[in-house]
Image (tube, rainbow, N blue to C red; front, side, top):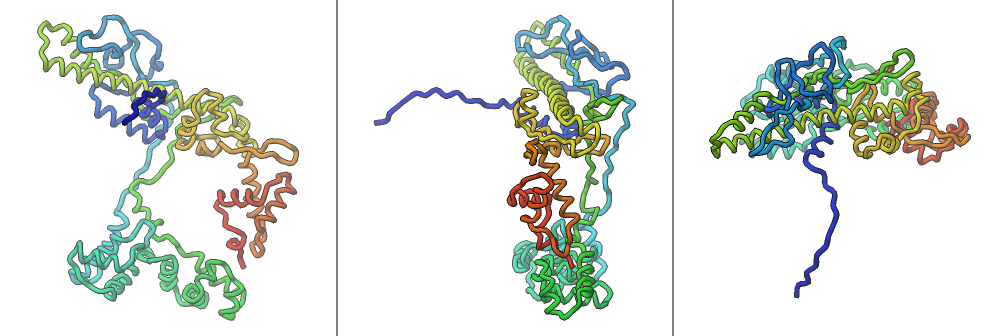
Length: 485
């Protein structure tokens, strides 16, 4: 027999509007500008125009007009049977007092030119090949990734040629044509692993003793080279330290990612656009939000007239009611988007202002030793927002400072106590660790245990495992891999 019961649960769920707002807050400036353009294109009830040279719009004023004379309307209470009142209602605009026409217009450069793949195909077209060979080489070139490598097994490529191109060949022909592809520029392209990539580049160099020795080392003792077992290399090849140093120097000058250096491989030249700007004015910090390309948003007056026309009409048909329902949806969406843009601006400024005040000494001096320990919860508690909101602002936004453009999340760090019991930022400790490793004797690199002792002597009692964690975060290899001749 089935047992039935009734349970009450209280669940919290984000509305679609809240989710969209979170997405707007997370967007950096460039992505937000694209979203604005998209919304203006998709919603005819939403219009935008450039601001005038006068004062910015008052968000709390009475009925206002934009430059074209469009009256703003409130759509909160619009329904099928009751429409706009004649009362004057505040307009909805997104302008904040954070931009002026005196500000420099920042242009984003775009890279133009032929793609990486097409450049390789243009080179292969200079060779005399049969029709089948052209198809195979094009297929091989198409299998090259952005780093310049062919990561797939040749047997898999062989099968794909048979199934997709109806080309039946053998592994010998495929390897022969692969060697042809590997003759293309940039040197090293078409390699199947790092060892092959480096060898391709070395074999293009002038045959001198250091180059020949470098080739022999890679071909015969690649593992010893990678693990920096220099003593074993000296014994095996019966060479001096100077000869080994010259050979290693030849290898170090090679490009391990030949495709990555090809600028045409990137459609857009990546450039950071700061979301905030901090300036020092008469000894005080001034924070502004980048709104360089944001238009002044307002609700279309034409939609207002459509609603008023329907309200004044005596005979309301079914099709008219459906049209008005569509209009209402667009008006609601437009009003919500305008409100969301305003809320995004307020949220970003509130977060960044709290961060700026917390790290005021750094922003005034540029001295990274002045950075205070700060975690997401510190800012969240200060402004009364959720930690996830602060995280969205910090992880994807940049700020322009007198000392360069910085990623906001870099201002956050945990705290540790020094030998005097004072809280210090882990960022400060990492900088000291980096300085110690930079100045070490590369013939005898410092182990993590020795690094821990050195930092302890400097007043930072840190465990060896913590040193290892910070070293990995700084992308510094272990002592054995830092060794030089």
